[in-house]
Image 1 (cartoon, rainbow, N blue to C red):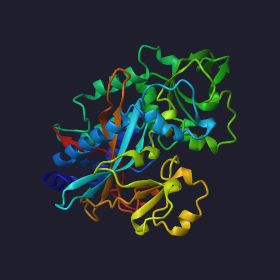
Image 2: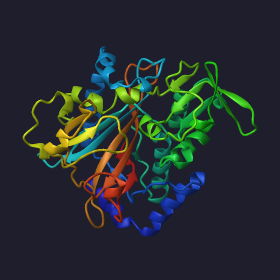
Image 3: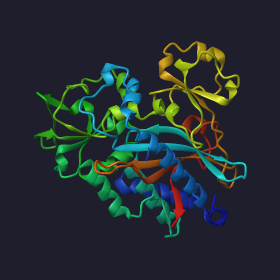
Image 4: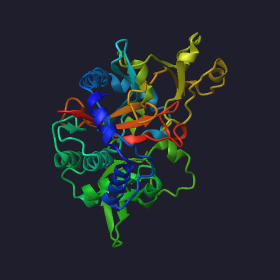
Length: 398
């Protein structure tokens, strides 16, 4: 998008440098990412950065509504998803924007998803550092939206996730973490914060307290949980033998309380009114359908990673939805190919990784994640056998 930088990057790109990038990522923690890494970062022009910041502020204003918990209460529709001891606001916040072009041909972000849940905060410093080392990204480019260096970024995350608790009493909780696509981020988190990465089946319960056994076999109390468990996946895993339930009243602090996954989700999109947010409707509220259905996409509210999305939606699709309270119709966002690769131009989606410490009045952006695509959608199955697609990061000038 910054034309001169893009030309410089493409001219200096080589397959050897790309392989060195992949090797760099593997060597950092002796683990290969389970997803494709794009050949290039996204160079974010100043106008797009300005618009992303403006979009975040407008959307955040809605999240600060005093009645947010009231309007989002229907999102907690199933008692088996309601976790006690909810805090005042989410700790982690992600906003995903598809990049389009306005009438002047300038980049314009449109909100695709919003989630009160963690993302790959640690992997994004891994990939940023690897790009800088192997692709010689100039020093005046950064991925951080706050003025900080790597050490300060890690310390900020440590303050939020671990705080003044001894790290052995803080666990990153997931379902079979080693089998997750994002395991490399969990591994990095575990190493950098000194906390165990724990499978949910390894948690023990005694009264209201939770424990796990460390490598020496000692029983360690869990005082804080950095939660990465998605209930959508948990529901599908009837084979798991659990010793506790999320709905138990526990003596534990959730770092990233699970209820916010539902409250701040696609459920909140119809309440957002901004030029950066596509028109979104609850399916349950519709007595008639939009005449231009070809301009809408049907999405389930609480699935993850794009599961259940219908792009080319028909009236029959809508009529066949049984649980209408769990779906939205969202105006399509037409991603534009804003990145020039050596072959086909590339579309992209940028996620703003945000944090909301307890003492702060508003959440703030710290980092970003970029997904590059040449397919119909941003996702692995739409980009098979393609190059210059996959996971990346955005850099902008400072």
